Image (cartoon, rainbow, N blue to C red):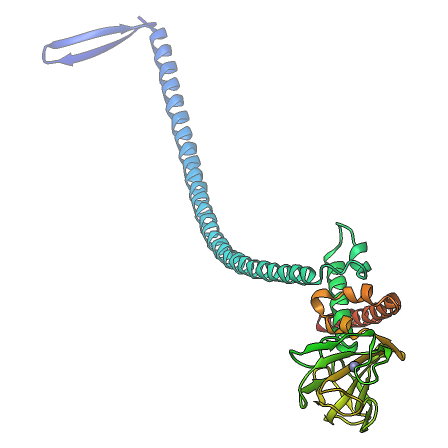
Length: 336
Ligand SMILES: [Zn+2]
């Protein structure tokens, strides 16, 4: 009996007893202890878990707030970038317009240069500068060649007699040997006769200075001579009256007097001479000389050392070009 315990359970249906051995108690204690331990461990774990959950929630909130911040930053950056893109687009548009303008200016420039070159074409005998430039000639060389060529022409057609001294006139006598209409002797006619009525206006055929305006009833009659650059002179005989006096500077195209019939003359006309350092040249070559046939004079008047004249002129123009480009460079440095 000592080793056994009895548990009695009473109900309305009576009382029942259960015999319990000591191992039953041991088992019961162990099971109870295990259950208590299990619940304790569970509670501790639950606390830790809840703690961790709190931490997780905290860091999750932090992350969300950081993400929000980042999003705001990105949105603001995006706005800034969009602003920049708009600015750049505007700038690009302006630049495009600028480029278009410059392109059109460059087109115009090339067209003008080509026109100028075409205008100057046919100057093969003298325009060495242009000839020596190969296919790879730079725009600078082309410009320089065109500038030199046009400057040379302007200079020559300004300073060397060219064109007619009277408007729309028939020629009555050419330069060269002929029988003189008054003396009837065969003699060299050193000028060109224009059949013009008395009082026809006479114009200077180049810039120069009036060397003499001399009245006379003999020989050449009222006679006017102009000295020009490069050794040329032009003279007008049998004039009615003068519109320029000795020592006066005159310009090409300026009225210098009126034609007449003074001196040894068989009828109203203008006797026109052109001389190079005193030697009479055929005035017709110079009367017919203009920009369109500029080079022909070099062939027709071989007695003049045109090469030297042209070379000197080109040197002078080159110096002027260099001075101008130096001035341009100096102005560019100043403006920067
Ligand atoms: Zn004559």
